[in-house]
Every structure is written in structure tokens, then in C-alpha cells.
Amino acid sequence: MSHESPGDVVFSAEQISRRVAELAAAIRRDAADGPLTILAVLHGSAVFLAELLKRLGTTVDVEFVEASSYRDGTTSNGQVALGRCGRLDLAGRDVLIVDDIVDTGHTLAAVRRAVEATGPRSVRTCVLLDKPSRRQVDVALDYCGFVVNNVFVVGYGLDYAGRYRGLPHIARLEG
Ligand code: XMP
Image (cartoon, rainbow, N blue to C red; front, side):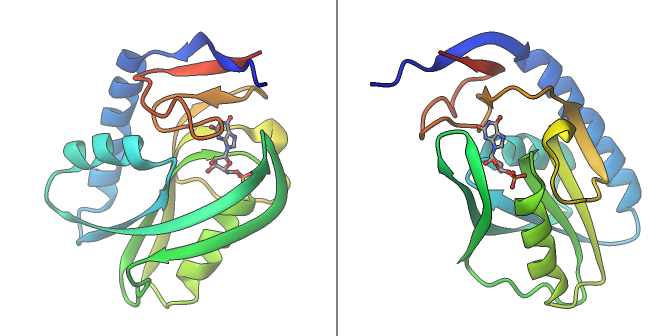
């Protein structure tokens, strides 16, 4: 029987909303010369993506990829399975990979390799949270919302065993 549940608020809904607006402004500035294709990594990025999209306006196109690296509770085994939602044909496009959190870096590195294999014009990355203390693979982050300590967090799209994605804030998982 699992007793884990959301505890202390790490980032409030207001803090997140302000930061997402700043990220969107930076992305808009940098993408001034052409249309952008967002590749959102499911499922964790869904809430972040929705807020980002509203702030970015109409100049973006969205594609999705499924990635799963967590096999057991909060521990990654370093293996990443990529599934496809629709096609992943990004040839000649300016791609922005959007994910919820970078932990070991395996997921983002695997998604980036898959994107690069399709021949895009450019690839950038945007994550809401960065947990640098756990990094095993080097990944470049062009846009990053917040840095988090080595704690497991839930809410705002992030889940534990499929729960808590709908919390409007980000909380530390306790239990
Ligand atoms: P890696 O280790 O490949 O992991 O960078 C990225 C994926 O792991 C999940 N992850 C978390 N999910 N709270 C979560 O709800 C966390 O603190 C956390 N750390 C990693 C997440 O799915 C992310 O895309």
C-alpha cells in the first residue's frame, strides 16, 4: 500500500504562470524569423504545453511524441522507449522540444536524437523544470522554467503512478 501524496508547494500556480509567460516571450523573440514546430513529450508536458501555447499565439504548429523512461516508482533505468503520436517528420523545420522535467537527461537526449534523424533546420529545447543534480547525460536546455533540488515533484502535469497531474501547482511528493 502506497502512502505517497503531495506535500509542500515548491512552485505556486502564480509563480508558474508568470514564468511560463517569460519563457513564451523569449521563445517568440527568438522565433521571429519563421514558424515554429513544437514537439511535446507526452504525457508530462501536457499542462505546460497548454499554457505555453496560449502565450505563444497562432504561429506554432504542434506534434507529439510519447516517451517513457520511468519503469518503477521514481527511479529511471536509463532506457527510453519512444512511441509516435502521428508522424515524426520534421525535415526542414525549426523544432522546439517541450518537456516537463529533465532529470537524468536520457529522455530529452533520446527525443533529440530522434528529431535530428529527420533532418530539421534547427532544434531547441524547452523544459519547465531542471533537476541538474541527477544528470547522467549532457543535454542543452535553451529555455528552462525553474531549477529543482533532488526531490520528486508532482502536479502541473507531473504524476506519481498516474496521479496528481491535475494539481495547479508543483508540490513535493511526500510519504
Ligand atoms: P530523465 O531521467 O530521462 O527523466 O531525464 C525525464 C522524465 O522523468 C520523469 N520525472 C519526473 N516525474 N516528478 C515527476 O512526476 C519528478 O520529480 C520527475 N523527475 C523525472 C518525467 O516524466 C520526465 O519527463
